[in-house]
Image 1 (tube, rainbow, N blue to C red):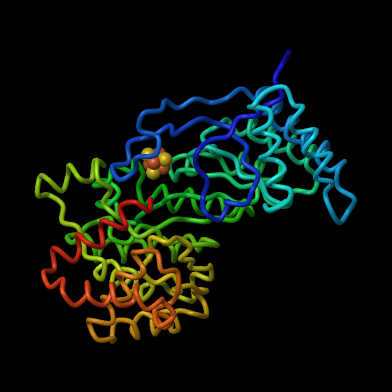
Image 2 (cartoon, rainbow, N blue to C red):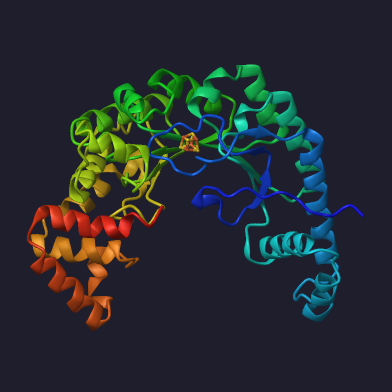
Length: 384
Ligand code: SF4
């Protein structure tokens, strides 16, 4: 008997954590970025349109079955449990559970198309898949996907419009940097020109663009260039969202090999913050009106958020206030944050007394700058 299951890939952007996940392609077609360890041992595949349409149908079937146990206010957990137990296989139970979690705790209006670069798919195929999603899930308001700048720049205006008309609402793209020298260093396989052409291509079609920037990824030598050239791309493309993903040199990554050759010097945690400041200071509020988001635990100051056209002075002031703190206070917050303290530095006093004392003692007693960075790295290395 045929199993009623659908595939799910491993990765989605944090902002799509509550979206239903539909696997359209498998893994990454590029897979060479030196900082990235996500798909290193996996081969890229496109899936057949018929397979994906089958997955959409299975998801819709589970949604319909689950909703028969819902009276508009509550779920009948007894009858749900009964249906769940009586599914034929563990894989079916897992899929059922996923749709249930999406319906009850997720964003019922959003679907994310996996994996790393769905936009590499032939536009007609992708449009057919999106059209089918719209048909089976008319309640969906947001369909989003990852797309590399390289792919975005190759899609014709007509095809991008085809995707927009089918119902693609947002493209997430890891630009990482606007500097060609940095892109080359990290082996991103894209250029500033592709970012500009691809980014404008998305925006011109009426699709929202969400780009990711990695402060610190250029190392000490390219810190200034990384900020300035990225700001240039933001000014020219005017993305809807710019999301900060502070660079951390992952143990075992190809960036580590580069560091071992002496050709790459990692920035300190505070230098990366200065780079973020520099980036924001170079964005032109008369050209960029999108939102800067700091929606990842890897960023030191998660409160740096705002619209480029109205909030640049506030964002800079917020950073400057932190930079003006006594060094001991800065270090205490750095360490607390890297240990997982989720709040603004102004609320450090809310930490429990024992943790606060531990943080304070470590900040005071770790005098060597190298030891301090190594201590912070031990925590950040496990975040991503
Ligand atoms: S394109 Fe994305 S998923 Fe692929 S290697 Fe680069 S960062 Fe990783």
